[in-house]
Image (cartoon, rainbow, N blue to C red; front, side, top):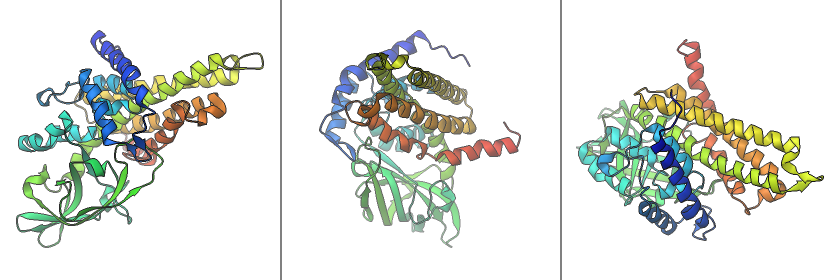
Amino acid sequence: MNSALSPELAALGARVRDFVRREVIPLEHDPRQNAHGPSAELCAELQMRGKAAGLWSLHAPVEFGGGGLDHVGQSVVLEAAGYSLLGPIALNVMPGEGDHQMLARIATPEQQRRWLQPLIDGSAKSTFMVTEPDNGAGADPNQMLTTAVPDGDDFLITGRKWLITGFRDAAFHIVMAQTLDAAGQKQGATMFVVDAGAPGLSEVRILDMLDDMFQGGHSEVALNRVRVSRDRILGEIGKGFRYAQVRLCPARLTHCMRWLGAAERCHDIAVEHARWRKAFGKPIGEHEGVSFMLADNLMDLHHCRLAVRHAAWLLDQGQEAREETSMAKVFCSERLCEVVDRSLQILGGIGSSNDTAIARIYRNIRAFRLYDGPSEVHRWAPGRAILQQRI
C-alpha cells in the first residue's frame, strides 16, 4: 500500500479541517443540544453550512449527488470532520452513513430512488434496527427474536429492538427480522424497510446513555404486527446477515476515522496546555511524566491512522477485509480511548470540566468499544482465522 496521499486529497482534508474549525467548533456550546444529542434545528444548520461549503455527502456515489470518494479518501475527510463531534453531521457522514453504503450496494434502482436519494440529499434520516433486549440479537445476531411472518402477499413483523439511534427523527427504519415461511420454519434473517409512523411501530422509551452526540438519542422500540409489502424487502429473503456485513465492515472503519479526528483534537489541546501550564519551575510538558504521555499519544494516533488506511485500501481493492476491519476497530477503539484519557490527565482537574472539548469526547468515545460489535467479538474473528491458518 502506498501511504502517500495525492495533493488533491491532502488539500481536501485540509479544507475540511479548516471548515470544522471556522464553522463547526463555534457551535459546540450551542444550547440546542441536550443529553439525547443535538436538536433537529441545530443539525439542519450544520447541514446548511456543509452544503454551502461544498463538502456535503463526499462519501456518497456520484450518481446520487455525492462526491464519490473511495474508502481511503473517506479516511482523510472523516478524520478531518471528526475533529469536532458535530463535524460529521455537517458533512452528512453521521449517523446513517453505513445505511448509505449498504443501500447503494444491495437496493434496487427503485428502492434507491425512494430511500437512498433522500438520505444523500439530506431530506431524510434512517435507522438500522438489529439489536434486541430480552436476550435477543446483540453481539450474536443468530439469537434474533423479532419475526416476520407471511400474511398473504405481505409480512407482519413482531418484536422489540433497542439502542436504535435516531429513531425519533428518522423517516424510515431498516429492520432485521427472522423470516418464517407459511409453516413456521425459519428462512433466515431478512431486511425490511418500515416507514416512520407505521401502524404497530412505537417507541417504548428513550434510553439515558453515556453519549450525547447522536441526533435523537437511542431508543427502545416495539413492533406489533407491523405490515410490510414485499417491495420493502432489501435484497433476498434470508440473506440479511450477509447484507449486514456490506454495511458493517465499512462502518467499522468510518467510526475509526471519525474518532481518530476527535482524539487528535484532544491531543492538540493537551499539547497546548503542556506548553503553557507551569509546575516546579517549568512548563509541565518538559517533565518526563507529561512528555512521555504526549509521545504515547502521537504513536497511538499514527498507528491508528495506518491501520485504518490499510483496511480502507483493502476495501478499495475489492477485498472483503473482515479480519482487517475487525482488527482496526478493536485497535483504534482501545488506543484512541487511551489518547483521550491521557489528554484529560495532562490537563488535570480542568480536563474533567466542559471548559475544553476533552470531557465530552471522553464521555462519548467510551461507547466506541461497544457499538458495531464489542472488542471481544472482533477479537474472536481474527482468533478463528489464526486457528484456521488463514492469517
